[in-house]
Length: 473
Image 1 (cartoon, rainbow, N blue to C red):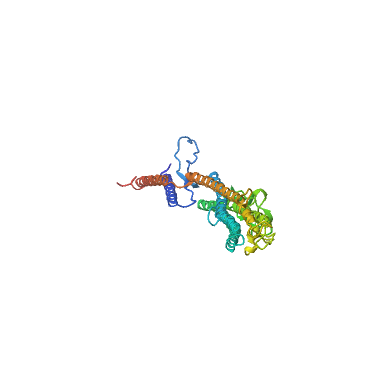
Image 2 (tube, rainbow, N blue to C red):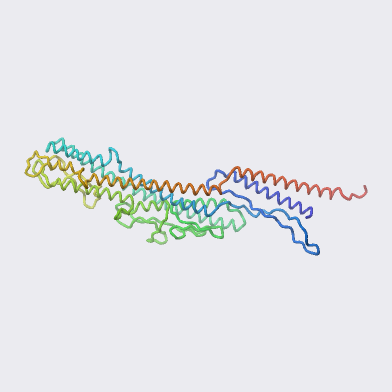
C-alpha cells in the first residue's frame, strides 16, 4: 500500500466513524419519539486491488472501509404482530365501552331503574285494593304507572341515541381510514423515489408503519412488503393501498335504529352493494353493534337491548291488561285496559297509562260490589308470580350485564396481548441509551484512530518530501 493510499484509507475510516457518530446522535435524540426505530450504519471492508504480473502472491493490505448504508433495525414479523393485536384491541375495546354504556342505561340497581318502578307500581295496586275508589290511592297508582312507562321509554330512547352516536362515530372512522390509506400511498411514492435515488428512507418508513398501525386498529387487515420499498395494505382480503394508489371505503345502510333499509355495512366506494368483511378493528366493533336484532340474540347489542325493552313493555301491558279486563271499576265499567301502546311505534316508546282517574281503574270482581278490591289485589301479585314481568326484566339485566362483563374480559386480554406485542418489538427496535452511548464512544475512538493514522502518514510524507535527499548540504 502506498503512502497516498494510506491517506485514503485513513480518510475512509474517518468518514465512516463520523457517520457512525451522527447515527448514534440521531438515535439518542429520538429515544422518546413514538414509532422511531433505531438505526445502524452498515460497513464493509474495501479489499486490496488485484495484483497481476510475475509477483502476484502474498498478503496485501486492504484499502479501508466502505459505508454501504444506514440500516433500520426493525422486524417485519414483530410489526405484523403489533398490527394484528392492535386490530383485536380496537375491536374489543370499542365493544366493551359501548356494552358498558348499554349497561349504564339500565340504571340497575338504583332508585331510577325499572326494578324500583315495578316495585312501586305493584305496591300501589295493594293500596288501591285496600281502598277501592278512593282518589288518593288511585292517584298514587296512576302516578306509579306513568313513572314506570316513562322509565321504560327513557331507557329505550337512551339506546336509540346511543345507536345514532355509534353510527356517526363509525362514519367518522371510515373517513379517518380513507385518509390513512391516502397517507400510506403518498409515503409509498416518496419512499420508492428516495430508495431509487440511493437515499435513506428510514424515517419515512417509520412514519408509514405508524399510519399502517392506525389502519389496523381501525379496520384490521394485513400489510405486504414489496421489493421496491412500498407496501400493500389489505382490508377484507382486498387492497385498500397498492403501491402509490389507494381505494376509498363507504359506510351504508339505515341511518337510524328503527328506520327501514339494509343493515349498516362497510363497502368499497367503487363497488357499492358488496360488503367488506372485517376481521378486527374499531370499525368492525361498531358495525357489529349496529346490526339489527336477530333471532336467538345473534344481532347487534344495541338493537337486541332495544328489542328486550319492547318485549318487556309488551309483556307488562299484556299481563296487567289480562287481569285488569276481568274486573270492574267502582262505576261498574268492565273490560278496561290499564296500559296501551301505539300501533307502528315501538312498544317501549309508546307505553302509556289509559285511566285518568279512579273511575277507569278496575278494582273488584264483577257482581262483588263497589268496595271489592280482589282484582286490584291480584294485580299487585303479578310481580311475584312465575314468568312475571319482574323476572323477565331481571333476565334482561342479567344478560346485558353478562355480555358487558365478557366484553370487558375480552378487552383486558386483547390489551394485554397488544402491550406484549409492542413490548416485544420495542425490545429489538427501540433506542437503548446505554447501547447508543457505547456506540458513540466506539465511533469517537475510531474517529480519533483514523485521524491519528492520517497524521502519521502526513508526517511520513513530510519527511520523505521535505527532508530527504537535499543536495548541497
